Image (tube, rainbow, N blue to C red):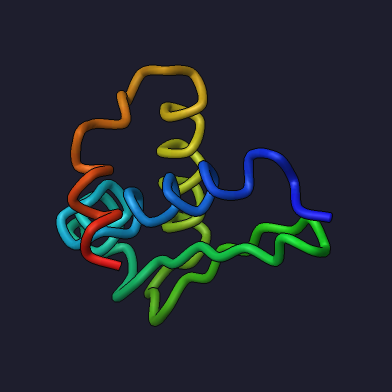
Length: 89
């Protein structure tokens, strides 16, 4: 059985991963990694996070953790870009 928030989680991940999104600008743009990606395994209830080609994976992970905390704490508001992301998939 899927988690009731599975669709919202997938949408939030798409927003975070979007080109010029928070993971892109604050990790790739800062030179912490070539890429940072999130994914879900809804039937297992798992999320994953991957860092791709990083000179310092720990710093990239720390920045990603900070981004996720800001989203969860409401410091970064999920914007109307959701609609654009939804339509592009």
